[in-house]
Length: 377
Image 1: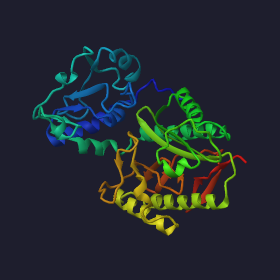
Image 2: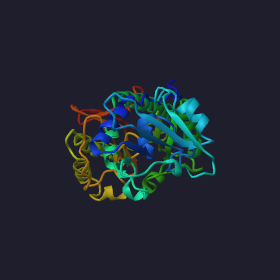
Image 3: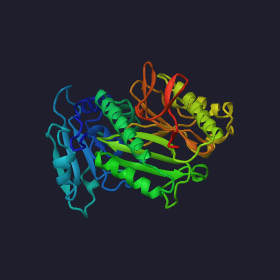
C-alpha cells in the first residue's frame, strides 16, 4: 500500500520558484494557495476537507541567490498543527532543512508573513493589501505542468482509486442504500491512505435530476453511479463508474454509449497546443451530433484542468489556457442520467486516460478503451 506519510521532495519545485522570483525581481515568496502547497510539499494542508484556507503557509527567502544556493524555507503554522507537520506531513519535503514558525492557536499567523516590494505571493493582488507582488498566475503556470514524480504518483493514484471504486461497485445490490454504498467506498479509500475530497453515490431517477448526487437513504433499484475525487501526496484524481444490479434496457445503454462519444470529442481535442476553450467547444458541440439536447452542457459543468485541485480551472469557451505536456484534464460530460469521468494526462502523443481497471468491462470508442456499465444481471 502506498503510504501518505512521506512528502514529495521539493527540490525541483524550489528551483522553478527561484527562476520565477529572479525573473520577476523578488527575493521572497509567500505561498498560501492549497494547490501550491500540495504541489510543493505533498502535505495534507487541511484538517477539514471543507476548508478553503490551509493550516500552514510557506515563506521562501534567498530566492535572488545564484542557482543551487540555499533557499530559506519557513513553515508558519499553529501550535496545534506543528507536531503533525514536522513528524508526518513534511518528512523529507525539504530534506529537513526548514524552520517551523509556530504561533498560538488564537493568534493570526498572517502577522508572521513578510510584505513589501521584494516579496511575491501566489495569491491574487486583492488578497494581500500589505503589499506583495502578485505572482498567482505565474505560480499556477508552474504547477499546472506536473513533474515526472507527480505524473508517476498521479498514475498510481488513478489506478488504485479506480480499482477500489470497481471493487465497491461489484458489491452493489438492489435494495442497498446509497449511504451504505458511499460508506463502503469511503472506507476502502481511507484504508488505502487516500483522502476522498468529493464523494457521490446516486441511483435510478436521481441520476437524471441530481447532477451532484450526495448519497441519501434511498435504496438502489436498477442503476447506481459511484463518483469520487481523491487526493494523495498532493495530487488529485477523478473517477466515475456506473453499475446496474437490475435490468438495463438496450435503449438506456445506447444513450450511455452516445455519451462516451461526446467524451471522445473532448479527449480528441485535448492536445498539446490546444487551448482549454477550444477543447471545450469541440466537446460541447458533439452533444447535438449524438442525439442530446444541444444545450445539455448548460446543465452541468464539463470539467477542466485538474492536478492539485478537483478542478483548478473549469473549462468554458473563453478559456485561454494552452494545454501543455504534463497537464491534467478531468472531463465529465453528462446527459440522460449518465455521467463519464476519468483523469487524463496531456502528452505529446495525445491524451492518456489513467483510470482503467483491467477487471472492469470496457468499450472501444474512437480507438480508446472506455469504461462500460457494469451489469450484474
